[in-house]
Length: 124
Image 1 (cartoon, one colour):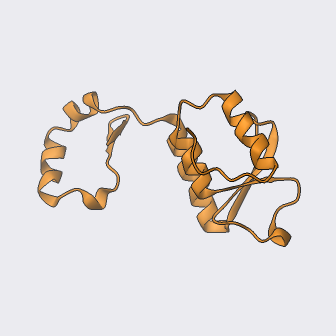
Image 2 (cartoon, rainbow, N blue to C red):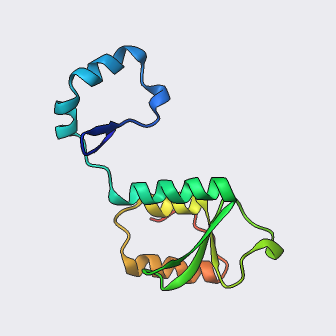
């Protein structure tokens, strides 16, 4: 559960028991003051995932990595890869976004490994 302004976000909502929903609504202001705020990158991540699911991929320029990167739903065949882009799967993206302690230098080091064919399986 996180707070986004005056909104509580509970994920996955489908796992919240029906009998708890009224209690959450009743104590919403208190809960908002106690739970962590939504991380600003959460909405960016959600938008990237939405676009990848709709189109199959998203290509963009990363100012942190200073390189072209593409996020894809799954591994692309070589002939379908956008030329000049380093490919990250959604699984890799979720690992990288999940660890908010990663510095720009750490991300750039991971990126160099990706350019040489590595796969992100963990960020520890």
